[in-house]
Length: 392
Image (tube, rainbow, N blue to C red; front, side):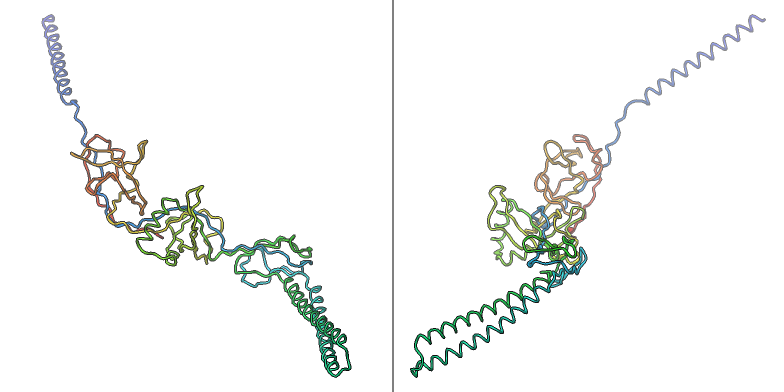
């Protein structure tokens, strides 16, 4: 009985193991069927048709700001600095007294010249009377012609001294006026270069500088190609030289968005520089709040003409490689294509595309990293919003 029982138990254990092995085999077969590779679905990528709208073409340039007037104040008479009537950096009006060079010596010189005028006037009056009497005596035979010639010479000499004394008074008055050094125009007075009591003289002493900041000039250069395009545009519109000076010019600093500073064209050099192939131009801008200072490096744009039906795409959708600029397009059967393009100016966050796409192309505008040329995508059509030219 014991042997039979043990055989029975062994048979049951073997059967259980065989069943487990069979179940494991079935499970492995089922897993093998479930792990068959299934390709992922195409990525969802945003696409949009190019925006078609009228765009103002601009001449783009870089330039620098220049003061309309900058004058160095110098001494025009010799003397000691007696007064300094401003603080460094003050805004001053035309005619404001800034320095006083001791006026007393020049006041005395003026009074002396004025006294000389009185003496010369008296001498001229006396010589004129003497001439008149001598002339009358000559007619009566009581004086000779020689006497008359002498009286005439004396009268002419005294008249000349009279004129010279008048000139001396004017010169003395000028010298006295020069002791007050005044601002020649509205502007900013720079730090003084002299001290109280310092001796100054003409041609050797710089006192300070006055800089006019309102208005302010912006100088920029235009390429030869742009010059030809501008001239053709001017001829087409029949613009006169006076109207040319009314063309608006917009300026922006490197730290600013857009072109917030407005002005007009002020001057165009009539001669092209053959060494650089450029033409110098200048704009004048109001600068009452003084956001612009002389020497700033600025961005400049000048509106030329409106261009209708231009195609624009988001600037971020444009890539670049060794062949140039490109965009990704959802082509036939939603397969991505790389399209080489030529770009134009930026309008807000959109960029003008001048060549390489059509109005019916679906441009990849986001998810660019997942849109691989030659691979299929699931396009999600979006609409681009029309934008105004950000001229602020």
